[in-house]
Length: 589
Image (tube, rainbow, N blue to C red):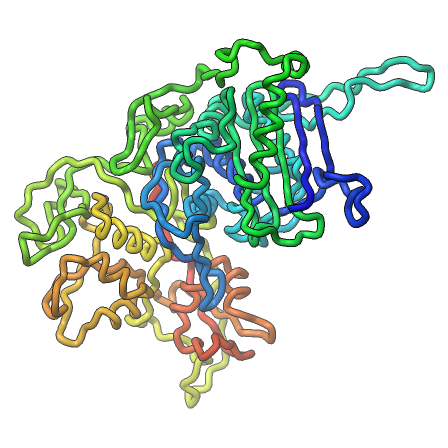
């Protein structure tokens, strides 16, 4: 580590108090480059912008549960993105507070998948982060981990919004000006805009200052802890090229970047080890200096430094099962209370209702951790235990999206597609250029949301976490036959064998005659629900799926005859383009 930059801002006025662009102005290679204005990847220090966006949209509350478990996102034909945490472990179901305070990567990626890149980039611009100039989709899900390049000044001023009760304005570089006659002139007034509510600003300050919540990742005495209440977030980029720490008190916001001017990787230096000590020492030096406290308008009394709880925030003891919550109760906004009225404060996370076990076990030694909800009018039918008496339970919901989010790009009514065109057909050619029959029983699509639910089910069953799989009437059961195998069934459903086994831990020994829980598939009726696309030179599975706004897995499921070695498409192939069948019912839309 050979260089660094620092920006300090007064929260209420936006006055730029300090800007250090580098360690040495006379440095031969980069001394005269202002690194506080240079754009670099911020790493995890960008996550608060994502979480603030989701809190503002009432997608989550600080008590919402996100599953920090292995997952995979399709990013190309045969290619997947599987995010990992900094500590290379998974932590199971965690609250939003725990996920953000400990900077877990997997929950952040899952949250962005639910919020959408368009929404995040749009909100980041409201925070004054204008350096994200590429198309939102170009950043991918790694945008949640700080893959987009921004400047230290932009991010520090964005954090100022949290310290300033949700009010945002550009930083003030000049307090006054002098004209050519020596007269003092005030700069034009800058309007402050309420880009997030006071409640959300307080929630962010409370989470980022929660030393108890971040203890698992940072310990109890990290450099993020000050002698006054302070909120802070670190960031570390790939190969340790950049270290960031940005944080604030009620009276001062500061951001620090450390690294090498030429982008050379550092030796295992994280944001907590590289940038946080500088941030800590700067903040403590200001706190300890009476003249500096007067400059930023800070009181001498330490009791007056606590973040103020606004009237729009209520502290309540509600906490989801199987997770760790804030001591003394979690803070909820009145907006969240209004949206979840009638569904409980933990809506989107906890399901309460009459339920039955989902698995049928031949042995009484099997312990139930998975349940389904019973509709009294439909009868108590589940995985074979029809004689069980439904009991009212509060259970964690298994879902592929977070909180009250509705998956971006999906519609509850579907999207109309043009009619299938008339194409010349050679009856002697049985190849791909033959239009499909009216109905093919073998074309089934397994939505990514259903596969993710099985990943979560497998994890929870093995970890002993009690969960709900939704309505009993919507589960799919299958009686295994003599020729069935774990590997064959897993391959047919697009799941790893370990996941399918983990979701059916009640089965011991032979599969024959066992009742298995399998993902629900959607049959693809091509004649009614598809159109044809003629492959052109340069086409790929990825760009064709993007053109028609359907998942790659759906395009592949509809065209098994076109799946060849190395996923090669040939000009002239006719691909059937089915309608996006991932239809959801969301009571909060």
